[in-house]
Length: 409
Ligand SMILES: Cc1cc2nc3c(=O)[nH]c(=O)nc-3n(C[C@H](O)[C@H](O)[C@H](O)COP(=O)(O)OP(=O)(O)OC[C@H]3O[C@@H](n4cnc5c(N)ncnc54)[C@H](O)[C@@H]3O)c2cc1C
Image 1: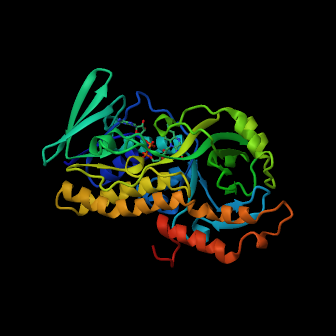
Image 2 (image 1 turned 135 degrees about the vertical axis):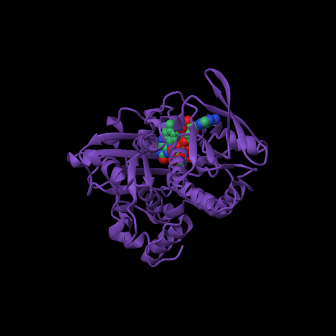
Image 3 (image 1 turned 45 degrees about the vertical axis):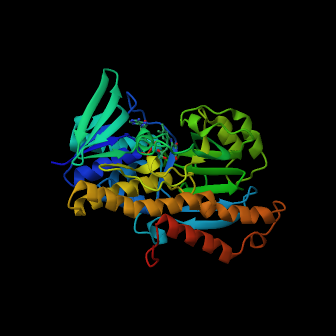
């Protein structure tokens, strides 16, 4: 039986383990932290990512946990609806889009992996250190509380996130990460629902932006909403990308930047003030790499293509990577050829998304309108034309690869 060693037990590592287990591989996921906890706040799984997870038999669990997103609304800071981009099966996509708590998604994947591959498929407290390759397989070394442990397998997948040690091993001379100068403050708070309880709202402009959406089906069933929000503000002195940490607590002073914002049935300042834990994370990415693989080792997810979390793509592209890897390994005569086929398919596509996200991706409509905005009394038709709206949305669907029935990717 072929054996894959996967460094990283986040969204990408666990999805890859499930996808490879489904094609008959043995998998060992080595996660650095000693005890996995359901960390993070909201994350989105776009229709093409949802297709992969449904294919792995996780549709019912996703439906029980996340919200089937109905639409993404782009608004000015005064609440004008510039564009409403319908999502989900009703809008012509073959699969739903889900807004979900990252930790809940991670544990949903983890439970499935334990049930299908046994508890031994996950080793916590194993931090990747190095890899050697003899042409027929790999030996990866992990630092553990009991010293270094070497594991041998057919392939190594580096799914160890933004600060990937596998990426550093394969590309030791890569420069520092790129910072956009924006800080994202995040939180989630349960309260009464807003709108239809299934809509994501993105309001403001490139420099001061508010993103808000519900993420819990369980809360929705009780008539409540677990509301995830991200407040993005340009920072004069952004923290270096090397210090980016999803669990760093944020200072609440930024809330004042949003006092002018008006959304019809949601007081966003009150929402932020009521939120118990607010974290901060900078808007950072890296230039696309010229290669992902060396011999029998490759990269996946944020380790391979760290991108700005714009257009809800970080987790989705990672999930699509996992399916592409499993398909390539199924078709290939040997694992090395499979890794090259996976990289040939996914590297150019994800590089395009990284670059599109630097140009604001689907959110470009906000800046077009903001440049014309004079006040709450403006007419929407003076802020953005229907042709501008649809051109931006359709272009991004193509780049990100989640087209509607009848569109071509
Ligand atoms: C704690 C945490 C909270 C997050 N919260 C959010 C959020 O609220 N919203 C959002 O949009 N995105 C969040 N993200 C990022 C998001 O999960 C990813 O952008 C996306 O899902 C791609 O997943 P990934 O598996 O490539 O990376 P990640 O989900 O980041 O997973 C990488 C995993 O690798 C592990 N790891 C790191 N170094 C090593 C090593 N040397 N050896 C072994 N394992 C290692 C990490 O502990 C982590 O579990 C968070 C990530 C983390 C780690």
